[in-house]
Amino acid sequence: MKTNPPNIFEYNNFRRFLADYLKQRAAKDKSFNKSSMCRMLGIPNSRSYVQDVINGKKVSPMYIERFIRALELNHEEAQFFRVLVKLDQAENADEHELYFSQIISLNRTPKRVLDKKVYAFYKDWRHSAVRAMLDIVDFKNDYNKLAAILMPPITPKQAHASIALLKELGLINQNEKGFYKPTDKVITTPDWEKSELVKQYQAQLLDLAKDAVVRQKQLPQRMITNLLTISEKGYERLQNKIAQFKAEVRSLVNKDENAADRVYLFATLLIPTARNQTKEKE
Image (cartoon, rainbow, N blue to C red; front, side, top):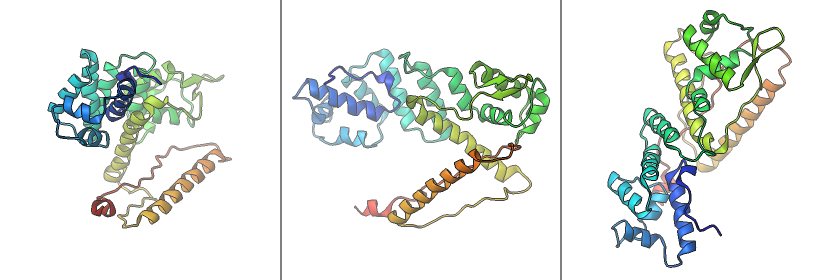
């Protein structure tokens, strides 16, 4: 069994790092447990604090510093740990994006570090939208036209930047006629980056949806918004229906026998707006 302390730079979740640290230290020292860590944090009468943190309890700035001392983190590791905690406890999308950017710059593990160009692609919806648009329009160097096609429109300078990034990442190439086209239908990200990148990207797309509702003269033709009350069993059924519908959408798109001539944002959301009352009673 591995007994060396886990490398904090391989994590994007401080609670998972803490759980792995405790497990590996206990494997090396049979007398060490979560109560031992509580004593090291200066709370000898507590047996549950560390487990509560692992389960989601918020950590105050004072206890962040106590954890750093107890975990014996060096200067760079301590900086990374502080930002990991802030990332986890971010209160809004802007804070989350800020701390995720800091995670990228502070990471010291080459095999795990996210390429900043890939991060740039997911950080700005325009790059993905331009890439999708190239699948249905013939583009060589008319950046004014390309910029005006998107909704909302972007500037020619932004269109130029997107094309440059897409070329650098190998996501587009010129075909035999000299037009830029996507190199692949689908792109994926490594597992380590995926959860955080997806959050950043989805937040961007939800901003687009909000813009469509607020700014466009006509509401989208197919828009459904409801607040539902439902049981846990009903929730599970609804989740299954959504998964089935998403699979049908993917199949419809892949089997479309006609050439694509438009780009749409498709989103399905099921978000809690109140606490689970069954769990509250428990």
